Length: 206
Image 1: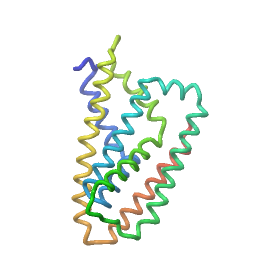
Image 2: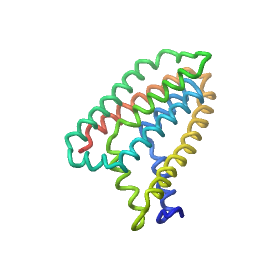
Image 3: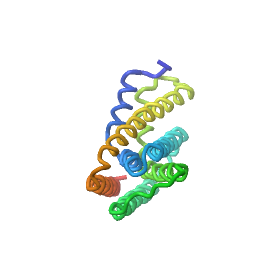
Image 4: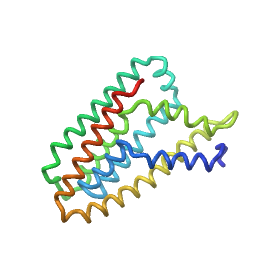
């Protein structure tokens, strides 16, 4: 379908990758738990934008540049790891204070978008992943249009899954609102998860 080889496997692979928790999942759930659905959707848009930038970079050949210059990849990887650890550290120390609520959701949505975009861009190896992933489902002479359709599939499937994640996360947050300790525990777990992802990224071989 759409000139994509093994179409069902292609869609299934995208779903499986979405189900694997990562820093983006933490960013989306944390934004939702702290400020509700609008902030969670802002984080979703930030995550999708980061993935889209990496897909475009992969198609544009940036992956080849990074493979030819492993030091550059290592530096980017360490910068991303440092950002994740810093974000987790800040979240840990903000856990005791209640989240600020304002009447205007615009600033919260924009803030969540920027934070999620930064988190999504922490791992430059995602470019290499897309370079390895797309050819698995491309036939001989695959056109640029087919590659674009594949990228659109990744974005749309990710959007549906992540919006569902926001809705489920918000429902759970509303149920736990009566127990402040649950909020504190959840925030600290999110902080630890971000730090752990940062450490893992830093210890990966470029």
